[in-house]
Structures are given as C-alpha cells and as structure tokens.
Length: 112
Image 1 (cartoon, helix red, strand yellow):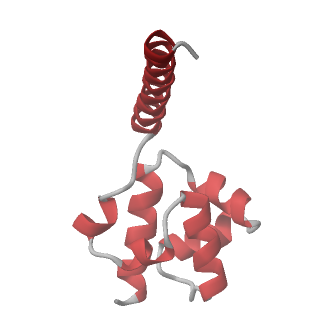
Image 2: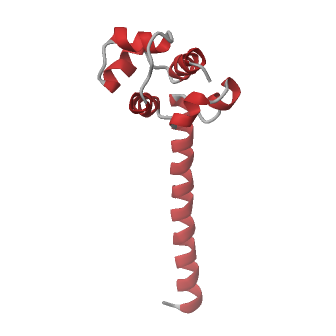
C-alpha cells in the first residue's frame, strides 16, 4: 500500500468516526498542520505515530491498511455504540431476573 492510500484510509476512518482533524491532532500531540500533512500523504508516518492515530480512532493499526470495504467493518458511530451498550445492559438485567427466578424456584422446591 502506498502512502496516499494509507492517508485516504486514515481520513475516511476519521470521518466515519465523526472526528475532526483537530480532534486527532490533539489526541496524538501534534499540530493541526502536521496532522493535515499526514492525511494529504505529504508526510511519512512512523509506526509509533500510526499506533497513536489508530488509538485515537479506536481501531487496530491493521485497519488503517485495509481496503475500503474491510476497513469500514467494525467502525461504529456513537448511536451504534449506545445501542450495543443498551443491549448489554438489558441482557444483564434479564440475567439478574433469571438468577432471581432460579433462586425462588430452588427455595420453593427444596426449602432452602
């Protein structure tokens, strides 16, 4: 993969995450101008910097190198994350209710 494709992936993934260039630049501790050069493919990127960018975008570094279809899989926006968290919360509540039901049945059957 050439630097231009990598830069395009970074830009696309950042946009999919609803982040601005300034957000990511601040996260990784560089100027907006320096970050802009990364997204424009005008700057070589060290592996350590790629890791920082990936961490800021909440993806694995390998996602930055994948083709467009592969790299968009697994990227969730805030509403999708909320739905998953809400679903997790509901499952946990249902599990607690089932545990209470099992305890009540055991008490009724075995008297303990």
